[in-house]
Image (cartoon, rainbow, N blue to C red; front, side, top):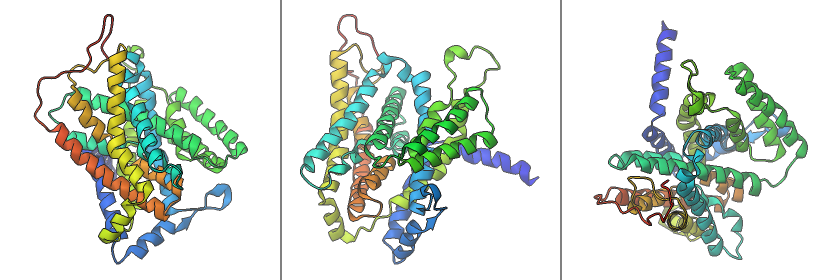
Length: 413
């Protein structure tokens, strides 16, 4: 009887965790707990937890708990991101270049401009390696905020944000793999191709058995970690290997959902409800040191570059890129969207949390003084971006003016 009741309860909990507001709330709660713990009289226990070492010494698996959350648990988050990427490219908005053009280019602008502003602030300094910190948008927080404040907004705005965030994730993954892999061991990297190929072969034949797939996924993660490439890349590669059912393939009544949709449905609650909040708990606990300590942290050029990049660079890059692609190409804004909506969304994209925290640790070393300063900047910038976006997106809506009209022969997005 216990088993019978446990399965419906588990499904009910999983359904709750799939809600964007719940995932964002858990992330926020974990962040508050981390900050409170790190600044309490028991802060030494928090630091001891972070540095507790666990795992065998072979294949560089003797990691601290903080490293296990960043390298291991976040691989689940990136696996779900990989599934989402595959679905969007095969069957979603990114399949149609005209529909995807504006948010895709907007995402590129939202990555490039913050990186440029950060670099200009830190030109000639010793913090230049942190240029990628303000380039990432935290989709969990951003969608949660949009779900709370954007009930009256057009559904096309959520689609725009989701598409932008998917491309943003793809660019972040590429940045981590290319610019934050310092020592590459070729043999483990090549060895990872074997379990990855077997995993791909099985999922292409719609094999869903965890007894077969989980050991292969674990082997892929272990070998990629041992190669020096950040282990979260393994999650993306595994997600991209899973097939997606296209609409033109779904004619048969017995086709059912594609395997990517099935895995995303199963793993998203684990990512949103366990992996990302635990990562936040282990990463967001920085010692503020009162007003003086806060001012000292935000006076660090690296922290200043992060704040300028997220609060100013993100909206500037997204708006400028969106306007240019709408002005000079066949693409335009989707029906129902106005430029004030895009401005609010662009500001909302300045919520950089999960991936920004990860890149900060990769750039400056977990627990270093500069890493702590950039974490404070990320938290402050994300809070400011959320508040500004709430003001912009909740303002009374007027008649839409979708911006530059398409010229002769132009098609809508």
